[in-house]
Image 1 (tube, rainbow, N blue to C red):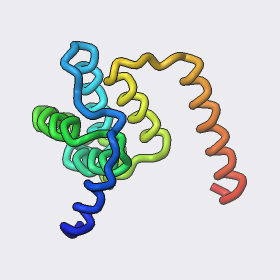
Image 2: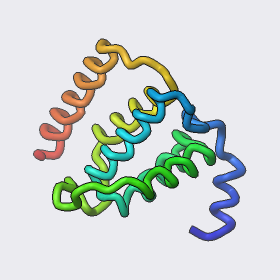
Image 3: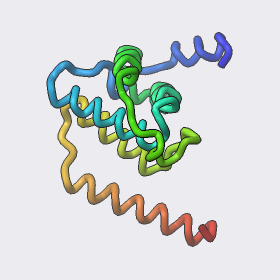
Image 4: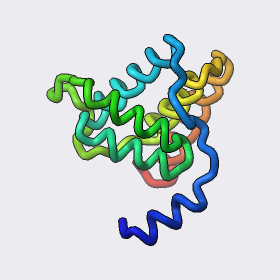
Length: 134
């Protein structure tokens, strides 16, 4: 990314959903679990790209990104169990990340919301199967 583009993005970057990682035990544990989840999906070496994507979406802010990258340095996983080493996540993975972000902020995620999300994901999958023959 060229410096002009980066500068333009930073100028329009609004407050994110997760500006910083709270210091309470639950938030810290959820942060580790989230990074472990991402590393298990795309490999530790690809997690910074995923976090940059979330930064660009406005889901995480500068301080949160910096702290997440620091924590990531201390995380190790068995690379043989990585689901997709291309660094790509599917829609469900991004939704799970958004739920982790909500939880890190201390917000509760209700079972009703989880059921609704699961229902919507099924509709999307069925629609893709019917429309694209997937």
